[in-house]
Length: 355
Ligand code: ADP
Ligand code: G6P
Image 1: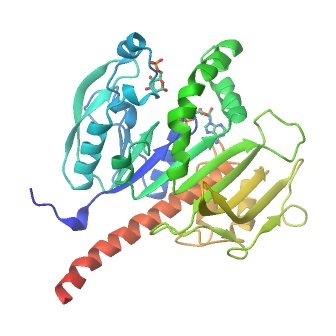
Image 2 (image 1 turned 45 degrees about the vertical axis):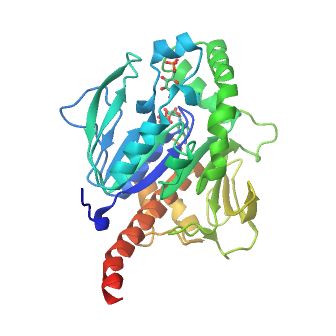
Image 3 (image 1 turned 180 degrees about the vertical axis):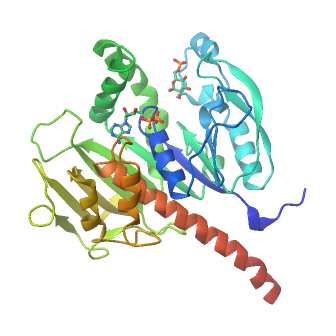
């Protein structure tokens, strides 16, 4: 089959434990590209796939090789590589990247069974989201950009309580037990993928309130790897310097405990990174424009685009703090990366013909 290299799919990996904000990030990302992603029309209603004009999001749970019963029988969790078919994941992501449609399995989260496959056509942008996008080296090498959402145990616990206790009626003890049960496999197979990510959004309890463990006020760090092709880190004031900034006072109406930014170079798993950190939350989202005006390299198309995106989705979780801000910024950086890759492909045949 002959494929045109000019319309090769750009592949993005999004890794996180379940319940850590992957779908919220996806909604912010597809909004930056100008349209919400929807389930495929006329297909399996339990499909995990989301499709927009530009972007197709596939959930890596679809590559479970063991269904729920199979996992129980073998005593392995969904996080265990033995419950996942990385060979098929690699083949299909590779095919899509090369412009070839695939018949992707569907893991049905309702029944816990593998349903008949669905056809996935090569999109402009393919996002593979789930527990293991950076686990297998072959799959990892296909990624044009990768993001890991790293939610600390304290915060994960707070979010789970909020969702599973308030909305699903689970008990505090059962939530604690399920987090504890996932921990060993999470630490063995999911967490180590951080080292491969081009960007990590780390979500920690605040340091502004001593001893706070509530998970309401958050300290969020955007860790951006240096030297990644088509991705240049965002910076505060002065690239490469180290800065602590409290924008409250005359310019921002911050209530207790206020807002504190930090920016500086660090090393992360032996790699050079830039870190932008925000602790605290915005009282008034429109004031974000003041913060935005001090950030550089945002890959916006017009002044205030970050603030506009945040205001547009002020109902999404994390919109008043660093999780929403940094997810929005990474969305803009991915758009920029996509446009650069597209431009480089358009230029490539020209150069070849010159030679
Ligand atoms: P995933 O797709 O990884 O399962 P979601 O984006 O659906 O995660 O988020 C799961 C739940 O976690 C949300 O319903 C919300 O309760 C909580 N949550 C996610 N992101 C945030 C955030 N930034 N701030 C507060 N709560 C959040
Ligand atoms: C994780 C996986 C899911 C899986 C769930 C529970 O969240 O992403 O695919 O369904 O764990 O697994 P279980 O074996 O209890 O069905």
